[in-house]
Each structure stands twice: as C-alpha cells, then as structure tokens.
Image 1: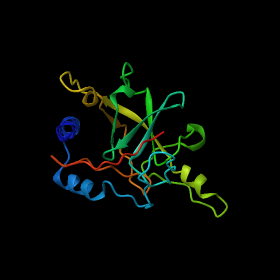
Image 2: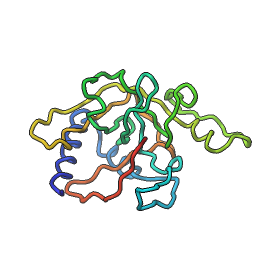
Image 3: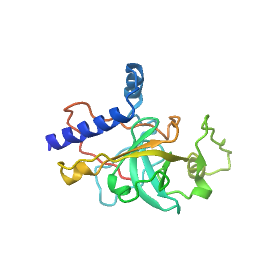
Amino acid sequence: MRSRHFALLLIVSTIFAGICPSHTNGEKDHLMKICGRREVQDTVSERIINGTPATPGHWPWMVGLYTAEDQFHCGGVLISSQFVLTAAHCYRDKNSTGFLSVRLGTTKRTNFTVHCQRNTEKNVYPERSGTTPVHEYLEGQVICMDVDYVCIPYQDNCTHFMKDLALLKLTKPVKFTQYIQPICLPEHCEEPPSNVTLYG
C-alpha cells in the first residue's frame, strides 16, 4: 500500500513539475502554508453510511467538473491556484479543453445560469443582504473556470489506479477565499491519512 501511495505521489509530482517548473521556493513555501486549511471548521463524521452534506467552505479544495450541457461529470481537487487534479477517465476519449469546466467554492451541484460567475481579476462577490438566506449567498460564491490544458500522462506499466490521473490547467489563477483553498499534496514517503471526501 505504501508503495502505491509513493508511486502516486511520484507521478503527480513529475506531472506538476513538468507542466509548471517555474515555481520559486518562495511560492512553494507560501502554498505549503495555505494548503489544506479549512476556515470553516465543523465536526467530521467517521461514518460513510448516512453521511451528512458538507457545509460551504468545509472542504474548499473540492471542485466539480461540468459538461458543456451543464451536467455534473466528475470531481477533482485544487492543488494550486491554477491546477486541478482529477481522474483521467473523466477525459477519456474527450481530451479536449472545451469538454469540461471547473466549478469552485461550493459543496452543491450548481446550475451555471443561476449560480456561476466567471472568474474575474478581483473575484468580486456580491454583498449579502440581511434578507438573503445564507445558503443562497454562499452559492453566489461559485467561480467557474475554463480548462486551458489537460495532461493525461502515458503510464503503460502502472496499475489501473495509477493510470487514472489527469492534471488540468485553468485558464487563469483563482483567488483563494475561505471557500476556495488548495489541498496539500503528500511529502515524499509520507503515509497518507485514511479519510476521503467526494464531490457529487
């Protein structure tokens, strides 16, 4: 099991280093300080059966991938301000950047025309009025991003699980908020925790 996680880390690190080799040590240090932080804290259930929906901001690195027809297709995780890690089967036979868009900042499946705003330079969110229900205001925080580049590495000698990785480069970086944060990637030979979050 440990070798499987190490291989996954090695592949992800290699992909990320190959696509974005320009990170400085300062940028890496900054990302390590902010990754994996949840500004909205809550108790986490250890049960899967009859689980509860996540509150907005509880898992800020989770993203949803949606088709051009506005249908939820896959989940993924934000690993930096401009890169998302997802499963390669989400792009099998559709290795085109226009096939899916990425939705960040929500825990619910969203409707593009109702909830989504395209990322702006400032990521300006509407102010919440006293009469707007909290859940409606939080759904107004959804950012939609197009995919600029899809990388599905060729991994012929890997197990099926290891072959199922894709790295998506967003058209531009997103601004981190309490609802949008990157996940931490494990360090070399680090034993990963046993908990999982899913989108969808």
